[in-house]
Amino acid sequence: MRKLTGMEPVSREHAEAVLALCVKRYECQINGFTIPADEHGPETKIPGLGPDDHPKLVENFRNSGHWAIVWEAGDFEWAYRFCMGDINEEIAGLMVDEGVGKQEAGRAAYEPPVDLGALLGKVHLEPYFTYAVGIYPA
Image 1 (cartoon, helix red, strand yellow):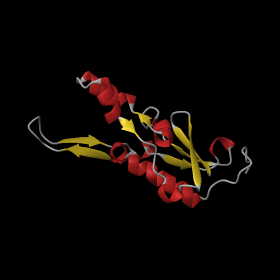
Image 2 (tube, rainbow, N blue to C red; image 1 turned 180 degrees about the vertical axis):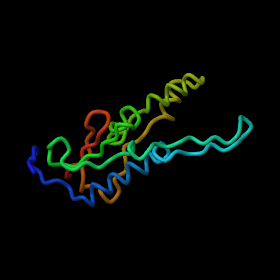
Image 3 (cartoon, helix red, strand yellow; image 1 turned 90 degrees about the horizontal axis):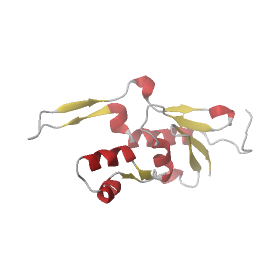
Image 4 (tube, rainbow, N blue to C red; image 1 turned 30 degrees about the vertical axis):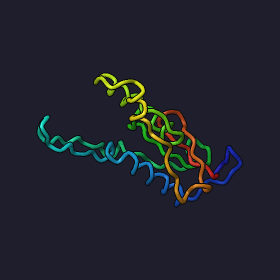
C-alpha cells in the first residue's frame, strides 16, 4: 500500500476504537430516539438512519495509506466538530429562531472535540472535507 505521508497507518484496532467513539457521540442521529410525552404532546419517535447511512471505516482512504471514518449522511461539518470542536450552527440557528439569544445558543450548541481517552498519544484525527475524518498515528 502506497503511503503518501511516509507514516505507517494506525492499527485496525485503533481505527475501530475511533469509529466506536464517533458512533457513541452521534448515537441519537444514527439509531434514533424517543421524545417522551409531556404537556406539549404525545410521545414522539425520531427515526434513526438506515444501515447504509451509518459512519463507515475505510482503509486506505483516497489511496493515502491511512484509515478514515466516512459519514456522508452526518450533520454538516460533523467531521470538524468531532476533531476540533465547534458550534453546531444548525442547532444554534434553530435555537435563535425559537427566541434564544445568539450567545446563549452558541454556548448550548457547542460540541467539544472528541475525548480520545486511552487513544490519546496513539492517534491523530484530522477532518477531511465535511464528511470524513482521517485517522493517523500521533
